[in-house]
Image (cartoon, rainbow, N blue to C red; front, side, top):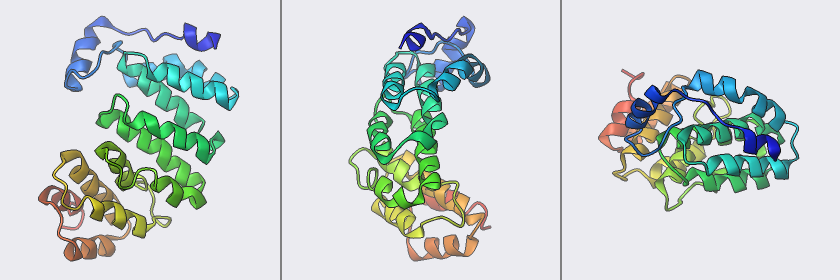
Length: 216
Protein backbone atom coordinates (compact mmCIF):
# COMPACT_ATOMS: atom_id res chain seq x y z
CA UNK A 1 0.00 0.00 0.00
CA UNK A 2 3.04 2.26 0.10
CA UNK A 3 2.48 3.37 -3.47
CA UNK A 4 -1.01 4.66 -2.81
CA UNK A 5 -0.15 6.49 0.41
CA UNK A 6 2.58 8.33 -1.46
CA UNK A 7 0.40 9.14 -4.47
CA UNK A 8 -0.46 12.81 -4.64
CA UNK A 9 -1.80 14.86 -7.52
CA UNK A 10 -0.12 18.19 -8.14
CA UNK A 11 -2.52 20.87 -9.30
CA UNK A 12 -2.62 24.54 -10.15
CA UNK A 13 -4.02 26.87 -7.50
CA UNK A 14 -5.72 29.12 -10.04
CA UNK A 15 -7.79 26.17 -11.34
CA UNK A 16 -9.29 25.19 -7.99
CA UNK A 17 -11.95 27.90 -7.88
CA UNK A 18 -13.24 27.57 -11.45
CA UNK A 19 -13.32 23.77 -11.22
CA UNK A 20 -15.25 23.90 -7.96
CA UNK A 21 -17.65 26.48 -9.38
CA UNK A 22 -18.33 24.25 -12.41
CA UNK A 23 -19.44 21.55 -9.96
CA UNK A 24 -21.71 23.98 -8.06
CA UNK A 25 -19.11 24.20 -5.26
CA UNK A 26 -20.03 20.72 -4.07
CA UNK A 27 -16.41 19.55 -3.93
CA UNK A 28 -12.86 20.73 -3.27
CA UNK A 29 -10.38 20.37 -6.11
CA UNK A 30 -6.62 19.92 -6.37
CA UNK A 31 -6.73 21.91 -9.60
CA UNK A 32 -5.80 19.23 -12.15
CA UNK A 33 -7.49 19.03 -15.53
CA UNK A 34 -8.29 15.64 -17.04
CA UNK A 35 -5.28 15.22 -19.40
CA UNK A 36 -2.84 16.17 -16.64
CA UNK A 37 -4.62 13.96 -14.11
CA UNK A 38 -4.29 11.02 -16.45
CA UNK A 39 -0.61 11.79 -17.00
CA UNK A 40 0.10 12.00 -13.28
CA UNK A 41 -1.83 8.80 -12.49
CA UNK A 42 -0.55 6.77 -15.46
CA UNK A 43 2.03 4.85 -13.43
CA UNK A 44 -0.46 4.12 -10.66
CA UNK A 45 -2.92 2.67 -13.17
CA UNK A 46 -0.13 0.51 -14.58
CA UNK A 47 0.77 -0.76 -11.11
CA UNK A 48 -2.89 -1.38 -10.26
CA UNK A 49 -3.21 -3.99 -13.00
CA UNK A 50 -0.76 -6.22 -11.15
CA UNK A 51 -2.22 -5.76 -7.66
CA UNK A 52 -4.09 -8.60 -5.96
CA UNK A 53 -7.80 -7.82 -6.14
CA UNK A 54 -8.14 -7.35 -2.38
CA UNK A 55 -5.39 -4.72 -2.39
CA UNK A 56 -6.81 -3.11 -5.52
CA UNK A 57 -10.20 -2.64 -3.87
CA UNK A 58 -8.47 -1.06 -0.87
CA UNK A 59 -6.68 1.37 -3.18
CA UNK A 60 -9.93 2.33 -4.89
CA UNK A 61 -11.56 2.94 -1.52
CA UNK A 62 -8.65 4.96 -0.13
CA UNK A 63 -8.65 7.24 -3.14
CA UNK A 64 -12.42 7.62 -3.13
CA UNK A 65 -12.47 8.78 0.48
CA UNK A 66 -10.04 11.66 -0.15
CA UNK A 67 -11.61 15.09 -0.03
CA UNK A 68 -10.44 16.47 -3.39
CA UNK A 69 -12.64 15.55 -6.34
CA UNK A 70 -9.88 14.49 -8.68
CA UNK A 71 -9.09 11.50 -6.47
CA UNK A 72 -12.58 10.12 -7.04
CA UNK A 73 -11.86 10.39 -10.76
CA UNK A 74 -8.59 8.47 -10.33
CA UNK A 75 -10.39 5.76 -8.34
CA UNK A 76 -12.91 5.37 -11.16
CA UNK A 77 -10.13 5.39 -13.77
CA UNK A 78 -8.45 2.52 -11.89
CA UNK A 79 -11.73 0.63 -11.71
CA UNK A 80 -12.25 1.01 -15.45
CA UNK A 81 -8.68 -0.05 -16.19
CA UNK A 82 -9.20 -3.26 -14.21
CA UNK A 83 -12.79 -4.08 -15.16
CA UNK A 84 -11.71 -7.20 -17.08
CA UNK A 85 -10.31 -8.61 -13.84
CA UNK A 86 -13.44 -8.12 -11.78
CA UNK A 87 -16.07 -10.72 -11.04
CA UNK A 88 -19.68 -9.96 -10.19
CA UNK A 89 -18.65 -9.85 -6.53
CA UNK A 90 -16.28 -6.94 -7.08
CA UNK A 91 -18.79 -5.14 -9.29
CA UNK A 92 -21.46 -5.45 -6.63
CA UNK A 93 -19.03 -4.03 -4.07
CA UNK A 94 -18.26 -1.05 -6.32
CA UNK A 95 -21.93 -0.04 -6.57
CA UNK A 96 -21.67 1.55 -3.12
CA UNK A 97 -19.51 4.34 -4.53
CA UNK A 98 -22.23 5.50 -6.91
CA UNK A 99 -24.07 7.10 -4.01
CA UNK A 100 -20.97 8.37 -2.22
CA UNK A 101 -20.01 11.96 -3.12
CA UNK A 102 -22.62 11.58 -5.86
CA UNK A 103 -23.00 14.07 -8.68
CA UNK A 104 -23.46 13.66 -12.42
CA UNK A 105 -19.72 13.58 -13.15
CA UNK A 106 -18.88 10.65 -10.90
CA UNK A 107 -22.13 8.78 -11.56
CA UNK A 108 -21.67 8.93 -15.32
CA UNK A 109 -18.04 7.86 -14.96
CA UNK A 110 -19.14 4.86 -12.89
CA UNK A 111 -21.73 4.10 -15.57
CA UNK A 112 -18.85 3.57 -18.00
CA UNK A 113 -17.30 1.03 -15.63
CA UNK A 114 -20.50 -0.96 -15.23
CA UNK A 115 -21.39 -0.55 -18.89
CA UNK A 116 -18.02 -1.92 -19.94
CA UNK A 117 -18.45 -4.89 -17.62
CA UNK A 118 -21.76 -5.95 -19.14
CA UNK A 119 -20.28 -5.59 -22.62
CA UNK A 120 -17.42 -7.90 -21.62
CA UNK A 121 -19.67 -10.31 -19.72
CA UNK A 122 -23.14 -10.13 -21.30
CA UNK A 123 -24.38 -13.15 -19.34
CA UNK A 124 -24.10 -10.98 -16.21
CA UNK A 125 -26.05 -8.06 -17.65
CA UNK A 126 -29.44 -8.76 -16.10
CA UNK A 127 -27.94 -9.57 -12.71
CA UNK A 128 -25.94 -6.34 -12.70
CA UNK A 129 -28.92 -4.36 -13.96
CA UNK A 130 -30.94 -5.58 -10.97
CA UNK A 131 -28.43 -3.91 -8.62
CA UNK A 132 -29.56 -0.50 -9.92
CA UNK A 133 -33.15 -1.04 -11.04
CA UNK A 134 -35.86 0.25 -8.68
CA UNK A 135 -33.36 1.53 -6.14
CA UNK A 136 -34.52 4.37 -3.87
CA UNK A 137 -31.52 6.47 -4.84
CA UNK A 138 -32.13 8.15 -8.20
CA UNK A 139 -28.43 8.13 -9.09
CA UNK A 140 -28.52 4.34 -8.96
CA UNK A 141 -31.58 4.30 -11.19
CA UNK A 142 -29.83 6.67 -13.61
CA UNK A 143 -27.25 3.94 -14.14
CA UNK A 144 -29.98 1.35 -14.78
CA UNK A 145 -31.22 3.62 -17.59
CA UNK A 146 -27.77 4.36 -19.01
CA UNK A 147 -26.14 0.98 -18.39
CA UNK A 148 -26.32 0.00 -22.08
CA UNK A 149 -25.68 3.49 -23.44
CA UNK A 150 -23.01 2.46 -25.95
CA UNK A 151 -24.62 -0.79 -27.07
CA UNK A 152 -26.25 -1.36 -30.43
CA UNK A 153 -26.82 -4.94 -31.62
CA UNK A 154 -26.37 -6.18 -28.05
CA UNK A 155 -28.90 -3.79 -26.52
CA UNK A 156 -31.37 -5.58 -24.27
CA UNK A 157 -34.45 -3.52 -25.12
CA UNK A 158 -36.49 -5.24 -22.42
CA UNK A 159 -34.13 -3.99 -19.71
CA UNK A 160 -34.03 -0.50 -21.16
CA UNK A 161 -37.82 -0.42 -21.28
CA UNK A 162 -38.11 -1.58 -17.68
CA UNK A 163 -35.68 1.09 -16.49
CA UNK A 164 -37.39 3.88 -18.40
CA UNK A 165 -40.96 2.95 -17.49
CA UNK A 166 -40.11 2.71 -13.80
CA UNK A 167 -39.17 6.41 -13.91
CA UNK A 168 -41.56 7.43 -16.68
CA UNK A 169 -43.24 10.09 -14.54
CA UNK A 170 -40.35 11.00 -12.25
CA UNK A 171 -39.73 14.75 -12.13
CA UNK A 172 -36.00 14.45 -11.30
CA UNK A 173 -34.03 16.31 -14.00
CA UNK A 174 -31.13 13.85 -14.07
CA UNK A 175 -33.51 10.92 -14.55
CA UNK A 176 -35.43 12.51 -17.42
CA UNK A 177 -32.17 13.63 -19.00
CA UNK A 178 -30.91 10.03 -18.78
CA UNK A 179 -34.06 8.66 -20.42
CA UNK A 180 -33.69 11.08 -23.29
CA UNK A 181 -29.97 10.38 -23.61
CA UNK A 182 -30.43 6.60 -23.68
CA UNK A 183 -33.16 6.77 -26.33
CA UNK A 184 -31.33 9.38 -28.39
CA UNK A 185 -28.18 7.28 -28.51
CA UNK A 186 -30.06 4.14 -29.50
CA UNK A 187 -32.01 6.04 -32.17
CA UNK A 188 -28.76 6.33 -34.13
CA UNK A 189 -28.91 2.54 -34.53
CA UNK A 190 -32.64 1.77 -34.49
CA UNK A 191 -34.65 4.93 -35.05
CA UNK A 192 -37.86 3.03 -35.76
CA UNK A 193 -37.82 1.32 -32.37
CA UNK A 194 -37.22 4.60 -30.54
CA UNK A 195 -39.93 6.38 -32.52
CA UNK A 196 -42.41 3.61 -31.73
CA UNK A 197 -41.37 3.69 -28.07
CA UNK A 198 -42.06 7.42 -27.78
CA UNK A 199 -45.43 6.99 -29.47
CA UNK A 200 -46.43 4.08 -27.23
CA UNK A 201 -45.27 5.50 -23.91
CA UNK A 202 -45.96 9.16 -23.09
CA UNK A 203 -42.74 10.56 -21.64
CA UNK A 204 -41.75 13.72 -19.83
CA UNK A 205 -41.28 16.67 -22.22
CA UNK A 206 -37.55 16.83 -21.46
CA UNK A 207 -37.04 13.13 -22.18
CA UNK A 208 -39.10 13.31 -25.37
CA UNK A 209 -37.23 16.35 -26.64
CA UNK A 210 -33.84 14.75 -25.99
CA UNK A 211 -34.87 11.39 -27.44
CA UNK A 212 -36.22 12.95 -30.64
CA UNK A 213 -33.15 14.98 -31.64
CA UNK A 214 -32.12 12.53 -34.38
CA UNK A 215 -35.65 11.57 -35.34
CA UNK A 216 -36.65 14.97 -36.75
